Length: 194
Image (cartoon, rainbow, N blue to C red; front, side, top):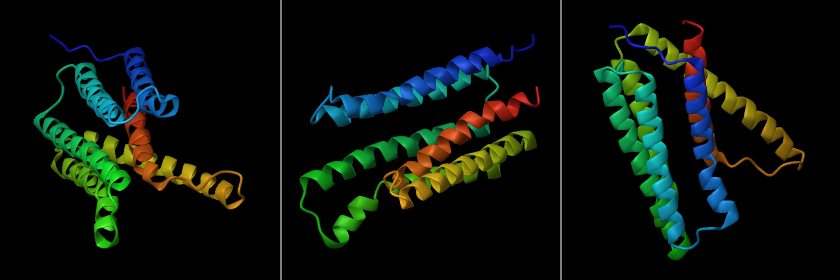
């Protein structure tokens, strides 16, 4: 029995859902529907739902074609991303509610970067452990596309900022932009080989 490959339409619908879910935290932040302590809880719940959607959605689209290396990668990535969400919320809370200074302030402010560095390590481990050359090539090309998008956006935004046309680019969004471009480029890269 041959396994059915997901159609381009199914991937497009999945991507549309991911984009729609990506808009939720921005809507929460700008509409102020949720305030106070409920806001970080709502963001955390959104993050768990988003991770579940992406992980289970891609697993379903790949129809059981996820090997042990990819399963290990996805587990490690989920742990790193959940750690990032928790550390980020804790850091923001401490920065807003505590009078920190000196090395403690620096440590608390930089703490969310540690799980992000963990994500980079997880990506590197996946590339080292993946025995399938095609899968490695797809991920490397997708990473190059992700870097290209980041460089393009930050370069243009930086020049606009220098001309006082736009505010300075928020550097903490560089990594999420990379991940978004990296993730969305993968199905496009795979489509060339189908």
